[in-house]
Image (cartoon, rainbow, N blue to C red):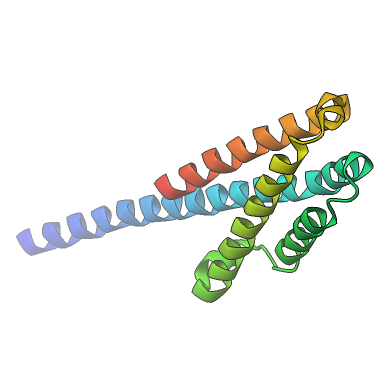
Length: 147
């Protein structure tokens, strides 16, 4: 009889653990989906930012081309929830995102040389949106890491 109770207790406790495992798995997937969403938001802001900068600093072609190429590289990677299960694809994704971040940083440094551009309201709005999105990416990544 005692063995039966031990077996039933073990069975019940293992069921509780399974539910916790499923809940944690769903939290991880939701956190990763949020990371992807914020990266996509950032990628969507880039064409407007490049076009605005191009109007004032068109001769900075190397920097503008770098941003455009980095965005294309990010867009060429299929960002799905399953991406985290493929270490090689995930590494390519992270590398592409890092290159895009670097290209955007170079672009924003170049814009410091153009006071008229910095005074443009559209550029300031785009820059604020980009900064906000970068913060959202950081928060989403931290939530993913904690999940």
